[in-house]
Length: 142
Length: 142
DNA sequence: GTTTTAATTGAGAATCATTCTCAATTAGAA
DNA sequence: TTCTAATTGAGAATGATTCTCAATTAAAAC
Image 1 (cartoon, rainbow over the protein chains, first blue to last red):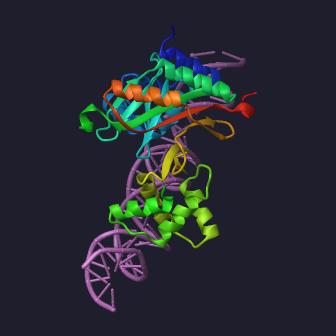
Image 2: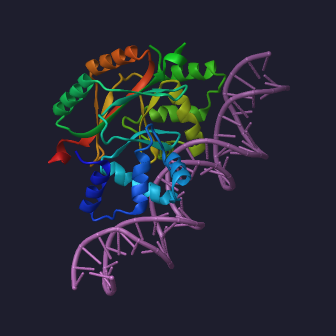
């Protein structure tokens, strides 16, 4: 069982890219956030905590983290992309409350299986999927 | 069984909005397109076919069509929003080829049922959902 | 350790989809 | 026909993301 740091280093090496202090800080910050985040949230957290890293570097690093399967883009809202870290976490899908913005995670084995079956049917080779159900949560539905 | 035109007129009236020639043209063009489209595709088709309608008006009309459940935003890619008309069509989900961009539609009753069950479990009242599976299609997987 | 070279960085400019502004127009109720 | 609030187009503004480029640096090769 390797750490996310090891995994990122291996990824970078395999692509001939460098492991820089900036990339290390971004990676670590990402794994300190346990909710969805966008580039701005990440930028502000990093500026507050350690040294300043430019927005450009953050925007350049997010695709690397996505590519190496350490994070995942989970939704786009108001023109912003939201991510979450996935390394060490099982796959799950989302319920999104359109009123209060709450996100509820869930996992259902049967849905996963049905998706596999559908892919077979269409001779389709899946890499990943996104299932988002929008609606009103317990508190907001009344 | 009312037409999409009727449905749109009713929607507009219910909101105290006006049925303008521009909105009529946009609505009709949307129902002439039988694939996914973004605002730019729609704009170009309309300019080519009938009179010119400004991009601003198209951008203002798309939310009205979405709100009245005549169209639906199906995905966001490269920072653009893609739509499809849904009036008269059953709900379906998508397989998206990341290589050639092909979109395959599918519908699976069991997946729908499982989603309902999950919503019940979380006391969540769904309005709509999106399931997109990314991967490689038959032709591109080799 | 030093050299070498290609990758990386920050700052700000550029891009590009989308939204806003505002004066002129118009649908549709009265 | 009148009246008023909604609508339109043109272009400016916005805002997230990407690009540019000169200066810096990781890390491979010596």
